[in-house]
Length: 184
Image (cartoon, rainbow, N blue to C red; front, top):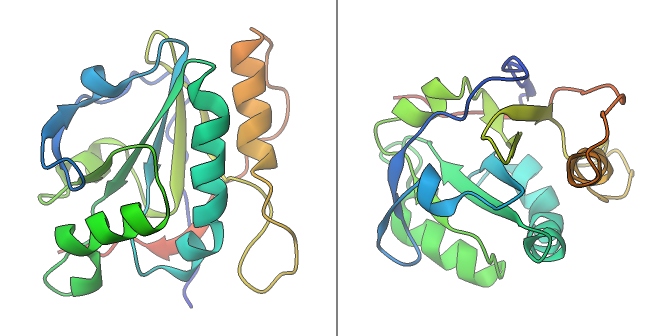
């Protein structure tokens, strides 16, 4: 399986706005509709990637743990569904329900939003503060399929706790590693 790292969008970047179809509710939703009071996690994921499958349960847990703290999660799939039909919107909806995602799972059909975020892989993670400025980009944690490190979400949880406690995150921000986005 190919391993593609994040591009590491510069910290302080303002969250690119979007309006995308939520495959679960069948509504078009924007970043401003979905952002949290204290912060927002934007995740580029997909259904078929083994790196994403490896962390899905932690993504669901992390979203539940931080929702009550004013942090909202948004998942986006930008994969080419024509060549990767398992990433089509109907399959995204089924996956979101199966994984018990409490966050919207949006479809970026044109791939324009992935390009605006400079997303490169699945999973690719971004945390924005209450002013929608980027404070973290990178990995969930050190776990990868087959490396026998437990999935804990430790890197992102630390970044979120720093954000919520108004502390500087002095930990290194390591790129996420995953499958490349399936470009058209």
